[in-house]
Length: 482
Image (cartoon, rainbow, N blue to C red; front, side):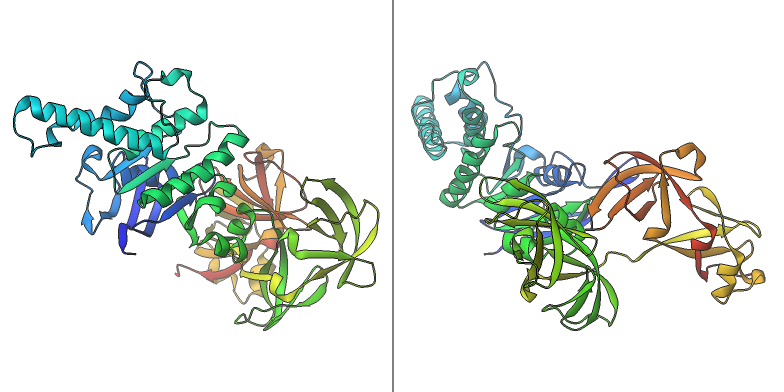
């Protein structure tokens, strides 16, 4: 395969804020590529820039090696299928699908001489193309139906037929199954994959549904906050996530804080485990990822660590159980049920333990030392401890009234519901459960992201205040000097 679509350092900003942030991506001819991520991650904006509905603030978009930044949407070799179908209610199925072809009449059957002969040839060609598109989407004999009489799934097929009838090089699909019920959505996933095979054109698909992405895609592009976090096949994304966000977003995972003792030996949940990863520093803090189906429950004395089942739910194809082992909660999927209250042990194979470098180990922030007791950062004023700074090898004359870089460990930040009493406040924008605590990202009102580890439970978008004890603010280095 050869590259068809190239995004080179593409950015899109609204009010000075990048919603797509330096995206680089190549899409091959004939691929089914899915842009996957939570709401607001930039996936639809990226799709709209490929379609031409939005223009990048910066960067380049190439189709077949040529820039399309100055080419309007209707002249690009792409068609878009929207979540809301965008069908014309006053037109029947045939006329909805034929609409684009009729707009291009001037380009059709130019080789036919004579006005009436050409009109007849155009009409026959449009009819042929529409019927072919209807056959591909499984709606043969539906051409004269009123679109308002069709089910949601049938209307979506009409929208897809209208998009493919012009034989585009690229079909862009913006959450096209979002309005369908679960059963219809699952049926349409298979239909779309089959259509992709039959048509042989490039599909670029946008969704926040992980199952859709894993079911249909050749490659998945995982996005968050306008940034691509990982690109890979569904198997690679699921089995080898690049970071905790990808592991948590794609399927269900046990994500646990750990320490890489040495190559192929890791410690987490109060025990040492053999793994297959290497290349980390000794005693490096890492994230451990284990899928629920990769943990085996057995009699209390047979496994690697002991635990107690605290809940068991039947999910149809497996039991979903929660087990507390060494104060860490594990989620486990098994076809064999262990009931709540039973004492068990856990066994995890070395190749089912996935080790990931942490995105960051502490919050590192630029700050201004105001006086002998106060320091300002993230638009808030906090007290600091002179002894902590001086124990790090700095004297008061070095840092007083200077620009400095400080660090605060994740578990040294306290969250409070009483935001008015805290130096700064913000919103919970993401959370990951790590077995014995939650890791939150709190976006402060001035836009700074604080990583926080706590046992307290919050919901997404909750407002919280941020407080930090003076002794927990560490001075890393002085930026400006007298």
